[in-house]
Amino acid sequence: TCNANCIGLVKLMGRHCGFIAMNACLAARYVDICLLPEMEISAEKVIQHCVHLMQTKGYAVIVVAEGCGATLVKSTGECDAGGNEKLSDVGPWLRDKILERFKQVKLPLTIKYIDPTYMIRAVKPNA
Image (cartoon, rainbow, N blue to C red; front, side, top):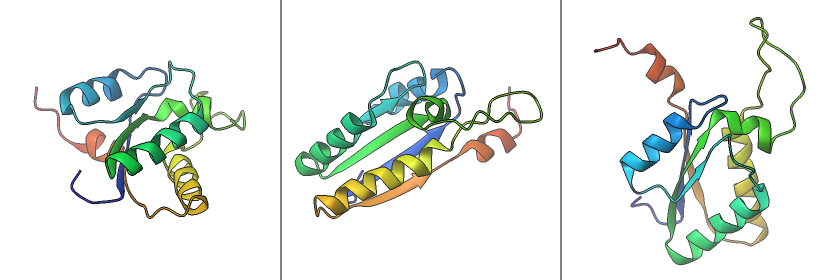
């Protein structure tokens, strides 16, 4: 949160449920936008709010659950080997949409995108 004109975008696990993303946001206490798959989300409103945050605060933290790929991005309808619907990768999609808008309005912006999914799944359980 110390870089000027910077958005930290974090994609967390949560295919159908935003439990992990919401609890991470509550624990961190400095997240500006939390997007959950249970919500009806308007990408346009999210991007407008990002512009507002940059103009007022100069930085923002956004957490998005991976299940938002089904609500924000059009699905192809394909299934994986397990029979689950393949979700679009919402993190890079949202990053690109935000950057596109900031170029249109000629505002400087850097986005730091973090997807800790494999780091979380690869750690030995400690309980």
